[in-house]
Image (cartoon, rainbow, N blue to C red; front, side, top):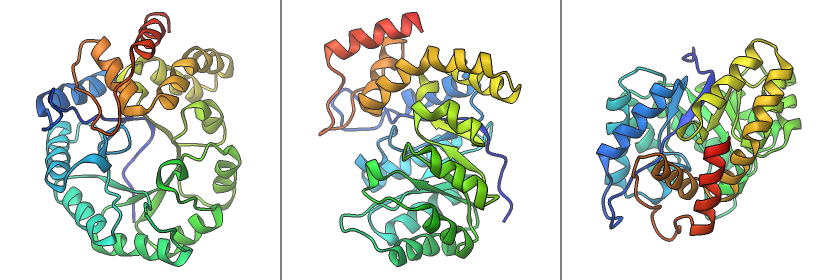
Length: 292
């Protein structure tokens, strides 16, 4: 299966809520998408961790997915996160995203019970058999509780034709080196502090929420990498690293929504039980945004 050209800076969207947290604010979602595209991202990924996809009802998930894809309107490629606890619901989401124009679906094996390797492979196979668009395999044990070894990832790639790209978010650069050595499937970095090392290891792109706040710096880093200007790439990376660390450790929905509010876009608070960023964190974020 041929994959769309996914490269560079892949921006993750938030899901804005009303002040009472009871409904999705589609107008604010549209403005946030336009900001990402105007900022120059090379692709957009709705409904990931930053987009609080796990905290949405099925109706809300459908609403955000369909609206996001219509708003993006193929101005850039789209990667919709469709993961769910059950295979049936993940398949339904994958089909829905494909029907509404997603270029790629991203799949993270989440589960209450620890999954065996056979169960993980079957999960990907069921989703792959149900759709015709590519799958980005997503490995992020910090959020899913499931850590896929490089060997398992390579087995999934071999057995599920739709799996044509990998997002690696363990923070282990050696896994990216191993993927590069043993497969031609493109891989993408999902760990902010590894952005520079990941590009050096051969990553085709960087999946990040940071372009909601500092798109120019993210894009400049990628352009320096493409130009093979290591000195400039290092300077740009270390300039943004404190903010990259902060938004990751502070929780992506809380920190990105606080940052958007500071830069003029009200997106509401994260959905409970996740708390919004506290006052100390907000002040720290404000200083970083003015000095980065």
